[in-house]
Length: 199
Image 1: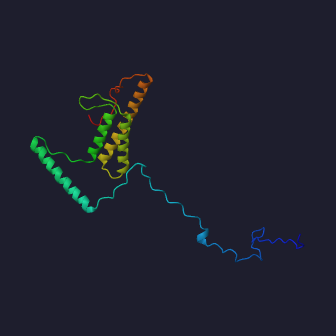
Image 2 (image 1 turned 135 degrees about the vertical axis):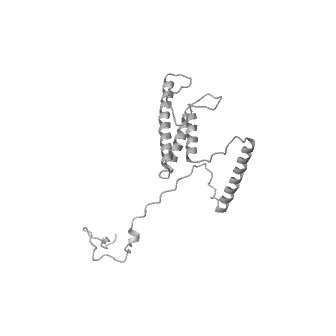
Image 3 (image 1 turned 90 degrees about the vertical axis):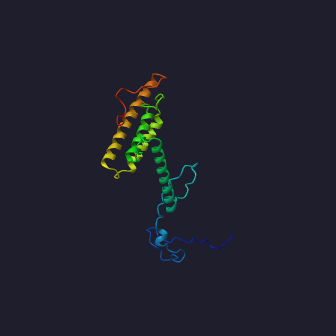
């Protein structure tokens, strides 16, 4: 066994009260810079992930491609309009599509899906999930066009959404009651209930 004394060296740089010891090695570790001690920046929000099975989006068309497709489309539409009027002179010009046309189209689709109307020769049937999607489409349309509609367009959209939502609730509750009674037949709509914008 060695007779050398056992020595303990205190390598701590700071005293118990947090001050730097006078005999501490000041060159052992460099003082971190402000950039090194700054907290890391927050992570950027991840872009909305596309559906896993969705194909990648193609690149947008160029200005020249958009112009060419628009010109070709308009020429074909004019040709079709001329052909339709030639085949049936009593028919007037086909009205242009505007915002009200879009709202009425989705509205009528929802009315059919709620089982309150049907194409000629078919029996009305309720498609609650389809009706919900049509109502949600109008809701998205209202959100995306907010502040960009005329007063009449805004009133039309608000009224359509209000009536369809109430009718959706009525029809869904009627189907629920019929299911509780185990009635396999279709649920006739309540007289006087349902949308009234388009007769």
